[in-house]
Image (cartoon, rainbow, N blue to C red; front, side, top):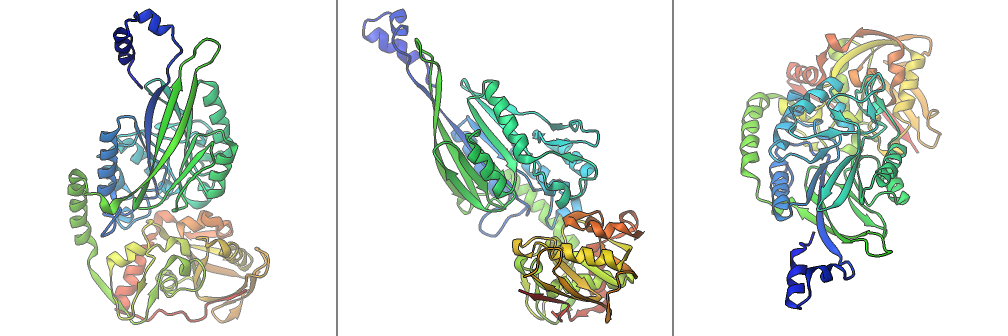
Length: 508
């Protein structure tokens, strides 16, 4: 805010006493508040050109140095999934972000991939506060260590309220056990109004939410700015009342908002007023020199990871496709390989795994020599191979769930082994599966089948509640890592010939 000293100096030069100067109409003061938001960052070392924690920290340091009135905000998803988080359950991300601590961190759904206990361990290791006003423990009370209130900041007399809200769909997308998640939009709107009533000049939502939820918050005009993660897009918008940014992914591009705030003090009958205008900037982190303190940690992590993972295990004779659109929308050779491994390693009748759990997002050309690193890149969540005995009716229900959101490229799309499935997407969700053959025979709803899957799905993740309706034969406590089972399968065969062979037929 402008100093009052220049006003006194001007008054003296004009030969006017200080009291007379104060009797003049109030002059407007101004302050610039910089908002740096980031979310959905997973790979500790980033890409070859941009992204990663070392470049992120360099930008954050520079913005803080340029403007002390900077808010550095995290809007969810870093503890998982990544190649390294499959080994250390995301501890590396806390170590790296502690170098330049956030002013506030809101958890995303991937913060719960390893369960609430691991998340709370990471919270304790953090040099910055975590908060989500719509998250409670099993008893319905705030979780110790995770803030449950709106956070108020003061910038030269301008009161800024930060409303931290988590995605309410998290129990479906991650392993939250019996934690409770209140509705994202309704909770945020209620908190915004309370913040205004408490005297906040600006209200900023820091949320992990889907686009439609972000736009509902913006359309309410209860917020001055929404800073959101989850959808991996880079978006900026301003409707003249509320501004919105979606913070992209991997810190490749950082959307920064400068709020130029003008405060006019109360004068006579006029009340104090606060007005602001946004200035949007996008920082391409390809232009950032990696922060040396962070890079030193990154280099140490690379050395350790290389020793653990750069071990050859076998060769793929055909092309393996793990691109997101493939594993979430059609039969994939990579999905077939993983499902075959689960079925073979457990002796189950069939295997089913969710395409969203396959994360490499690449094509391995025919003849590729596969390494442990490749497998952990594809399966970074640390999921375990479990086995359940369920009815044919429940298996059919599970498959219906798997094909229910193909149009949204949802992660629940099934990759299977031991069965063939015909699905008609012209039918309504829940009635799309037209034919299922299990090891050459028609699915019998009354029969019992041994199903290999992952512990996330067996617990109802991605909507697969039907898988948990039978008898668990191998629980997560007694299971192997999925990645380890796939590694062992490839190593035992030396050469794997996975290819799309008609297990899944999609009609439209």
